[in-house]
Length: 256
Image (cartoon, rainbow, N blue to C red; front, side, top):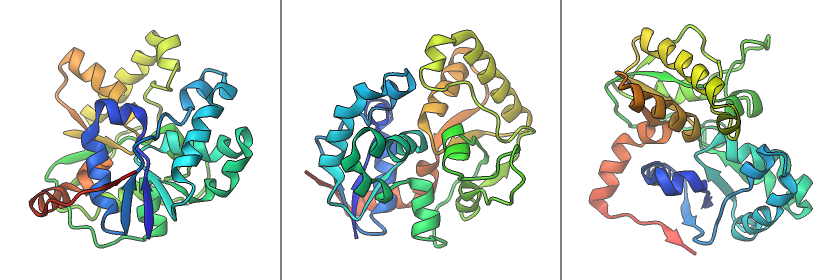
């Protein structure tokens, strides 16, 4: 299986450890290649109402990933943008879009992985990002009368020593919303404070998510207020043993 590793620009710049953890997880399933010329997927432009300005970014995305069996990235928001808007804005993307997956759904739906050997001895709350929950249906939404399985919870249940903590409002927005946090900072921070108080009151030591953008927003508040809680991307928890093991074996990723 040939897998293209899609690392969103903000993860590449600020959270490279998330990209490394994603690589370690994907190497279990096939040959992983990181196209070096990949760029932003164009989501920030779309969020600002200037989606046509992101077409050139989609063209670069298509050029880099069109020949892979699967394209996997550790960000539900970026993956959702490509899947929902890619083919509309750039028709050639129509053949690629069905092969683009968020890390959670690739592991749970495609590979159906129930053999994780991770270990993380902490109390962890899962932040259900809006794009992942309501856009990609990675879990149950309170406003929908369905029986959707929380795919992230199911993956984390395989992690030794990890205890899942349930906040009182499991699917509430953190207030980040991409450019919303820039245009409406006061509202954004207030929403972030509410989420953090809920997680802390539930006894969580860590907040995890499939979207580092949400965690980045929450971590900014944590650092400013020196709150007793930390953030960690889902990939880092699921790869907690694989990273240590593969480091000893000096595994590497292909780059083109």
